[in-house]
Image (cartoon, rainbow, N blue to C red):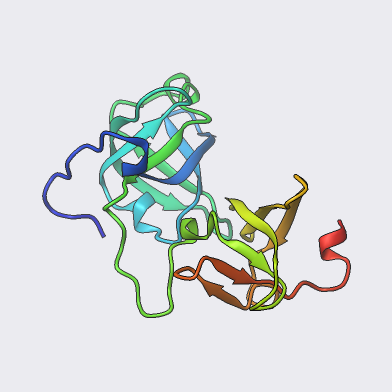
Amino acid sequence: MFSAGAPAVPTSSEDWLPVGKVVGVQGLKGELRINPASEFPERFTDPGSRWLKARGSAPREMELKSGRQLPGRSVFVVRFAGIDNREAAEALIGQTLMVPADDRPELEEGEFHLLDLVGLEARLSADGDAIGTVSDLISGGNELLELKTPDGDTLMVPFVEAIVPEVHVDDGWLLLTPPPGLLEL
């Protein structure tokens, strides 16, 4: 859901929304594999402006020409204007795919953007203390929440309804109902 008019180019890091990561090349003609950090496939398939950001530098505008999801996988293959060989594509591996933060699709009641989970407290009961804070979301076959505990440990929790049955974005927390042993791994 991208606006028809050209969005203003954001100027600070808060103005950007990371939607994926370049994880590899596909073939010899400059196509890139993107590991998505967005539940909206049109971010990877609909042509238009996107931005790539290398660590330590400002995002640079790229024109997405086409994209498709690999069958049975959560990986997308995209083609950018001006990237037409494997060598040019390899130079982009590790960069983050960005869109302006105000370019967020409208949500239905009870829905939320996955990146809104970062910073939420993880609790074992509604009135319980936080056992950790969501520090990252890792996309793969299934989404994983990375939690940082108060003592500095890292926990990985599958983001599935059976384990994370409630998400209260506005109140700043989510409920965990982990199976026995999950939090001890």
